[in-house]
Amino acid sequence: MTTTHTPDTLHRILDHSSRADPYPLYAELRKTPVALQEDGSYVISTYRELTGILHDPHLSSDVRHLSRPMPAAEAHTTPSFINLDPPEHDRLRRLAMRHFGPPHTPGLVTGMEPDLTAIVNGLIDDFAGKERIDIVDDFAYPFPVTVICHLLGVPREDEPRFHVWVNAIVDSLDYHPKTDPKEKLDNGVQARNDLTQYLGGLLEQRHARPGDDLLTRMANDDGPDGRMTDDEIVSTAHLLLIAGHETTVNLITNGMLTLLRHPQILQRLRDEPDLIVPLVEELLRYEPPVHIIPWRAAYSDITVADTVIPKGSQIMLMLASGSRDPARFHDPDRFNPDRQDNQHLGFGSGIHLCFGGPMARLETQTALSALVRRLERPVLVTDPPPYRPSPILRGPIHLHIEQS
Image 1 (cartoon, rainbow, N blue to C red):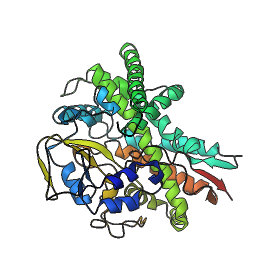
Image 2 (image 1 turned 180 degrees about the vertical axis):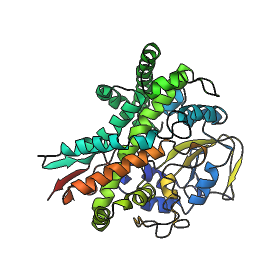
Image 3 (image 1 turned 30 degrees about the horizontal axis):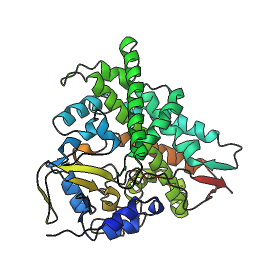
Image 4 (image 1 turned 60 degrees about the vertical axis):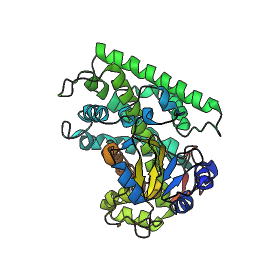
């Protein structure tokens, strides 16, 4: 089967002017489940095809399997395990998971609930006296940053330093050599190097003076898989620091925006606090923090929806499009916290399913519950709000609200 070229649709999705509402463009893209692009890459946008390929062992996350060089900034550094394939991926993921959740540390996430509640309430206490609140700067950003810094053992006072690096790294994720200035890539590469050097310095400190944090535990783990090397620890910490707050900032902010746009559901959450669990799952489907996996590679020729994707081809996975696919979800453009069988792609799928998902869920449940309970008659100032540059990690850069 010959695939249809849809470069205009993809370019419009990636263009910042579409950031506030890319969903009609996703619907257009889904008309061709597997679309060949002008540069030889393939875009997959439908739920069935996305879930199938995410579980396909012929799909590679390793940039070295691409037939043409990868220009993105992550291609210039030691890869974290999400950019590796089995068995390397499996070993490093197991080593990280030993200190982040079940079965080895089953109480880590749930045990943090009192601390999460205290942080959230402290941030909301600081709203007192403010006529206008920025949900991003005043709440959704400082909350998960404080949490991941505590977990990793990164000094919270260093946030201004790594915030600049993280912004440059995220900005470089969708770098395209034909449309973007090379400075965008160079800034991303430099930021990755700076963050790597910074985390390496923290790791050296932990070797000399162990603490009670993930850096220390990874540095001193003698489990059945052996120890991580220092480079592997730094690359894992690099991943956890960025993914541990960037996606959660978006999820909390998208959640509050969605509730303000659906006042009846906001009021229902006030009246039915237990609704928060399915509500966050629906949020992960309806307004997810991660919209696109910008590249994967084919180990060998792969057939998807009667289309042969040649070995070495770059594959772009449109996760947010799959979670709005009407072939899988009834009335997909409606926010419905009562939705059943909600197997969304908000955290991906397959061997790279986000292992920080339990923490992100609990943080978002805690954050939105407190905001809804404690804010009286919040009013959205600007709709749509201004959005961050990235089409990959999508969320408002600011979300101003007032209390009437």
